[in-house]
Image (tube, rainbow, N blue to C red):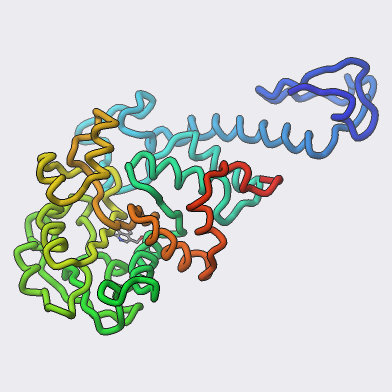
Length: 333
Ligand SMILES: Cc1ncc(COP(=O)(O)O)c(C=O)c1O
């Protein structure tokens, strides 16, 4: 990092100089012959932060090998009979740990630059228009359902107290809780004892014309439910499908491109065209929710933001603006 006269609050160096940020050198006081000055606080903070982040990366590389993604060759090899296979868990490397520590050092404990960057990158990865970051999967579920109660949604489609939402009998508690929290009525269908997922053959039994407005369920333990059957049913009856993807981010579901077209999964077909690694059929349909609700529909994003951000339009106005992320951040960010 370059140092010049303006870098110093007190004193200075006779010539432009530089500070090497890689590594920490400790100097014995006895060998210090002369203090030349004191750096400006802002610069000193940047130097200290860079050193902390470099040490953070070293720490994470050493301490978190087991959490690295499966394709990473620094992840310890799988040893049959020895390596534990968790049903779920965090997957991260030093990039995420550095980002988390960086936010903490800036004391960005709410949505800040890292969170906003993550929203954009995840949306791009998923091939959806928007993702919204919230504090937990349960909050995401609550937001996804609450957004559909917005008075701005046409009455026929709006979820109103007393409306019915089809879900499955053995699911996650906070997949069901938002239905009740919004005064809606959960109507349960059975789980298949083999797959653990909802029995789509019971959807018709649970449906009541004029009463049923949505289907909401999770992919059990991350194994996709019958997405095609579920979507076809929702399309046929003009119902919302709210997926709780808390356990299934990264799961894939395949169907022929012709079926994806029939089910109007155009955004996924587009993603498949752009990215040969993604099959034309994989992944998330309508309005799923994990820690982030993935949303294809700009208007719904705005309604969801209203619920997340205290009913204000402050952030949703961003959806229509093209200015850069950095320019929206306070200068201290
Ligand atoms: C399917 C499903 N939905 C919702 C949640 C709730 O997520 P959180 O614990 O982040 O509130 C979980 C958590 O494990 C889950 O597995």
